[in-house]
Length: 526
Image (cartoon, rainbow, N blue to C red):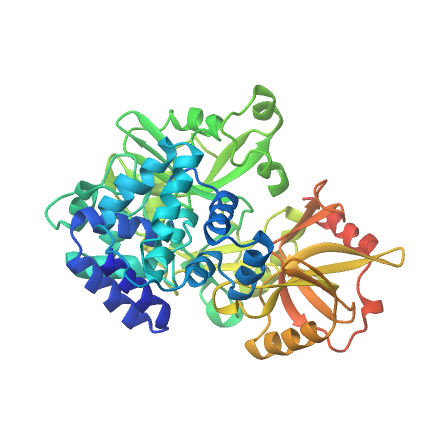
């Protein structure tokens, strides 16, 4: 376990991508498979299944420390991370014991907690708090939360593992797609050059488009490009291999249970077929809004009423495997010709444009059509992995914007844990400010520091970690869509809100009204 603790320390102290990759390589090169399989599992953001929730963990800690819960919450708020706060508050001990190997501890101790009574779990926690040093305790606490990325993206993990295994980065990316089982055998197979572990259910790594900054400069000969609508749904791959069907989201979740209607359609596909497309709600041949799709998300049981009210299909726009063969290296034009032979799913229609003027004229109509813009793909492009600029572009419509007043602020997490960076923003309704959204990004570091100083000096009330402030500052908020919502006091929910700019030129009284915001709902209807 000491090796993994040292890795976390190095990752936390470094901002260099190359140094992080070297630290990852050093750990995985040294760790035995029984430990490395769990190290990878945790670094990928997975949570150990212990059935111990955060309140129980924190209350048990307060009991061990003989401290009031409010004192712990106040300390955790200032530290910015409850796992680190518990480690720091326990403090150093004279003779800490050496922890067991990482895999052994997880499998024999952590995973066994779900079989114990609450009192025995508490007894076990107290034993650890009395025995281990601070860095080990920090790791144990993080195992409960599953938040162990430490500035390590999946791409960094892939690069490090690919270099150790001496395989191509794309091969490692493919091997890590889908469900990863933290077992020594899985890890050995993952790292073995000679073993092919690609399962019949595995999706391919997704090829991602880059945003268009200047259409006039980017696209000259329009005959080179496939132009399609950019659909507002959920990216997915549907797979049929050996008579079985699998539906994977871009987030690498198997979502068969949520979309049985898509699974039923996919059963008509020929064996050895993988299609890339967009999950969309269809009714009477018409694509419905993203709001309709949201009602079907994350459902384990889908009723007949759900299926009748919101039928889902895939808008197919690429084919990655045909007759059991990986065809990603074929040019898009050839892949499109194969895709057109299938009639199982709707095919993403091509948009006929011959020059940038025609494209710009159609682009203006995108919101009315219920689409997010254009997808432009070079006809001779292969299907790559990740975001590689040059062959695939997304030309999105401009976001909607409203001017809001800062009402509440809360400190961020990670490197922002000491600053008030998470804002609750409001609009006017009958001379009253009504919260409408939260935003966490969009300001520069200098602006964040300036706002943090102002918030601390202009706090009206404290509600735990939240502070209400004088309603003086206006921010322009950009968002991709708006929909009715019974869960929000304002009656609407904004999709992907972010701060566009700090409107220092506006007074709070000049911010938008809720009535004006609700008028945008009509613009969302295709």
